[in-house]
Image (cartoon, rainbow, N blue to C red; front, side, top):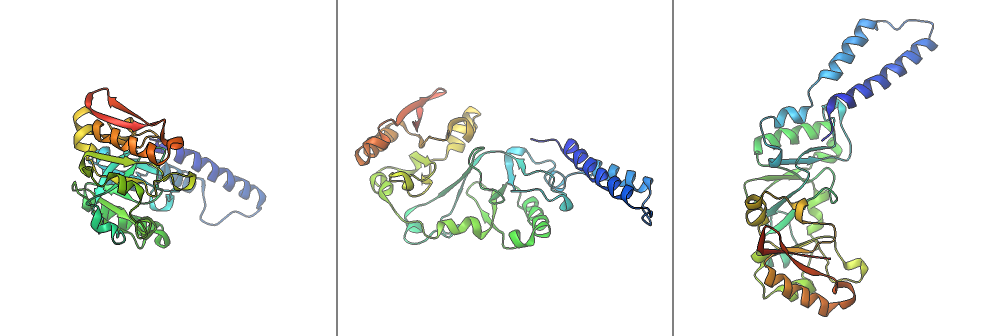
Length: 278
């Protein structure tokens, strides 16, 4: 996490340098601008508390996650990331407006964030609905064009997502595919596949989630791990070793050249939990 003061101090130095240059070029003093005024403004900018830090004060960083594509200094948003840098949550397929018939075929939609796979600006997650509502109000004031249409989506574990149509629209055209076909006889609560779509490189994955094993209770809480500890960029899945082996075998049958190097590796902390990865 970046510290506020150095960033604000650096911005203040640039501002003052610009002012000094302009004043040197002008022979006439600017009415109302004095050295004491400039010093007071500098002190205020350097000590002003970040608005999101203020709103989220008292809430564990593990229980919220916010990311933006830029800062909004005038609104008191001085960083582009707050809270957890990774998470795994689950939404109802009807709440994220999945298209038919997929919305009736799946029970939960995994939504995740990891350090090297982040969707800027939305969704933003918090376990405290009141605090998230304050964040929503702040964002609408900071950038109404981008955030005015943001909506809150309730999640399975009591958390809430703040997402715009930019995020939810990706679910509208999702349909069943070959991965759904090869896993339809497997218990979806015993595996979860997360990762980028393989559709463009000759693969058979057309979306970035399958299954809905709750790694939060199965792995993260029990072994003090997080999504970034086990989900690497090339990893495909996690949880039941026997089911992952079946999925691997069926993937190899579909495209041996692409999936033959997939391996099922037991978790060091528990041999009954495994990861499917390259």
